[in-house]
Length: 286
Image 1 (tube, one colour):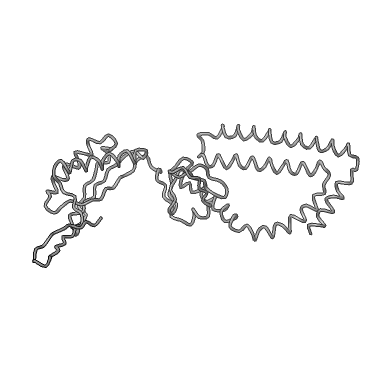
Image 2 (cartoon, rainbow, N blue to C red):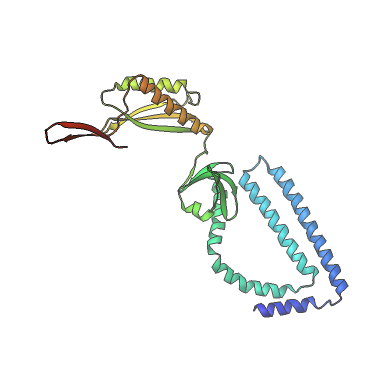
């Protein structure tokens, strides 16, 4: 099939055997292709500017991609037409190749269809922080076949749209505020009301904590080494690490100053020598 296609293509090119005529057609074709690319590039820029702020960034990106591919298709058809190539031979070969390609590209087609579902559902936008399985990062682009993200350690990762559709997706920055949950324990001897008042005071002093919604203090359970506590703070989504680092440092310093014990597992081991004298040592479990 390939040999027959190339033979027919060569015979179509030889219909106009005049070298000067062929050269002039090639130059004219190149100029027209460049003109088409320039026109569609200007259309892309104009459409992108007109759609800015009216639709989401990923939809505007898809529109620009559609314009680009339309221009490329038109340029290819123009090349064949100007060179006098018989399109029936190409279309015939494309029909057979399309069947073979279809079987080989099932995954790509699945990702393409999944891409349209992502566009219609809009679970995230360009610039959002998302988590897909064990990958977390900032969305750089939403393409027809995949989503490109940049991780927090500056790695570039491509995730097929099909994978995103089938996985549990978390959009970390979907809403303007988030909640930080801190779970820790205090010793059984501590006054829980005093611990609660101290934590609320630290939350009021922290510049990254929001007053509304208010912080939450909860007693989770009686643990093996102490009483488990949950302390929840609300913050603006861009201040995650600022709040987490500052509030943990404040809690550690305040608990040490007020002599509030954060329990840890420890085992007392007594070693007895032949004289019956025992030495006691402590082993700590992290």
